[in-house]
Image 1 (cartoon, rainbow over the protein chains, first blue to last red):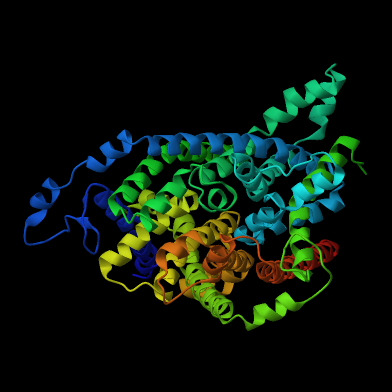
Image 2 (cartoon, chains in turn cyan, brown):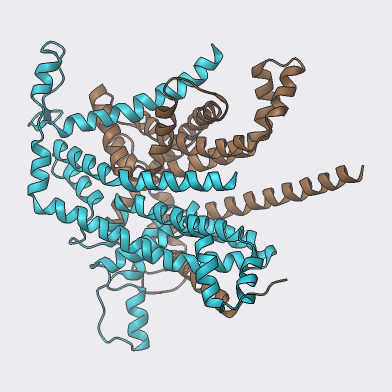
Length: 293
Length: 271
């Protein structure tokens, strides 16, 4: 009996507040817009029965999504931004994780804390910090004008550059921590052995260190790629009006256009896009756990 | 002792500069006299004074703290239960679905979680306010708690629990007297994680809050959209200071615990 409650309470909570809401999203994505409250039809009505209800559902919203250029462009541009920023985060994060793992042991706890500290600081504040730097009259422009490198202010905030900088900045700890965890376990004697056998330091790094830290790299990349795909705050604060990302489109569809069925359809397609990387990520984690045992 | 090569030193210096310089600039300019955030006009603490006068921000901060305390506490209870069930519960019907529902919210885009919860609350006819934000935050943060707690439960020696049961404890007593004290650090860090996630959340709170309840991130976001302002810099500085103090205290406490544990182990070896 006690075991039953222990299982039932969290189970029912998640069913009611995680699974059921998804079913509702799916249902509304198949409904029509109506000028009512709630602004969609049909509502589920016990009197007319389930078949009458189901017969009114259709894929109209999805057809509409596929016909409107905006959504295609938003999905593709989200994928591109997520991919490019994952690669950039890896390029910045790997050397840091590597240097942390090679640092003297008594420094490591402090270095770890320095990486984790920004992670505990508000996401919004960290994005806001870059607004002051990258805006047209921001620090970066003032600094460059002062040094005489440029003679006229650059516009950094409008194109996607600012979005990339913001993403790399806020997601860097997610990349560093798993790579560091993998590199820290690495046995130094393996690299020494490779060097003794005639590898140059660079080849040893390429042939030994990189393959042995692969699980960390893969985990870090997914931890960045998956959330960035649905990112809303960064493109809306650092991007210009022409920065297209699907999270932003969904938000606007819902709050500005009040088109709930289309917003739900956008959410369903985004979820379908995410299933592949999520499944790959799960596999990678399982493989890692098995390797540890 | 190993020494860092020049390459590693350079990448650490540049990396940490990248992480910290933006925040340092933010903090410095919260003490700026001028309203223009990017032009230095002398030292002043007047923005902190104005912030303290700003009723809207203070109210929002109060709502945020209430939501975070309540939701992280419920999330810790539910998350610990879920972790216990997943690690110790054995087989039961729908276990795969259950573990799927624990891991899925961790990778779910916030816009989707927020949208789906909002549609649920409207379908149920619930008025949006503090209650709905608490429900939403509890749901996603209990999953984080359960991941943190189950990683501790996995490494935990099960025979200790069995010994307690053999010595006549009831399962509840064994949990309270043996299991809970051992997993306590994980439960506490789970609570802290849930608490910060709730404090930090903008997207899910925007979907699930009504006009009656505005949280601090929502307030900051709507102010920030209009541009950079010294008042927000002051607010950010206060928040950064609190987090920094918290993290430093936590790391000092764990360090002391580790030293004590080491000493105990050495003492145990000698006897």
